[in-house]
Image (cartoon, one colour):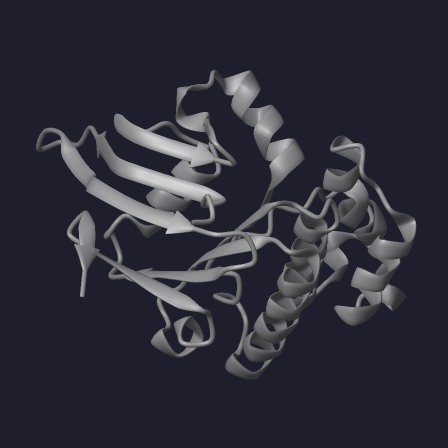
Length: 222
């Protein structure tokens, strides 16, 4: 049997609240293989984004294991987790998180340069396919929301990450634009061989991925 690219084992996560500890995740286990696409659905507050952040080493679980390519990244310190993210993980957030002082071209190249894998030809191909070739010298503030989201997708894919994590990647886009962006994202993920874990509130978009996991009240629901 193929070893999973990402193996989340019995994940528990609690946050403090005014009413005492709030358990957001209560024993969640999920696996994702290389080249697999997995939608993570659930109501607001069900723990979707928390699970995504744990998968990317942006936070640590209270207990359980976050195993990426055989390494439990949940047990690493901040610097080591940052290194794993830089080398192995692509992140796409709903808020884009582009660097305002960098041009579109520099934003796209940023993560690949940090990982030591900048490929000018591949970056140019990404820009062309995402409709950004004419915008490379512009800055984020000069772009529409849809254009910024496509830059964020190109930036995440440019280093050819093993794992791509996307939190509502089309949440700020109209339906037609969102559908086109998701189509391109799925095509590029397939071509680069990455595994994709995508948080979405939309059952329609979730149906376009290979598999779906639904979170409910901190656990896996139907």
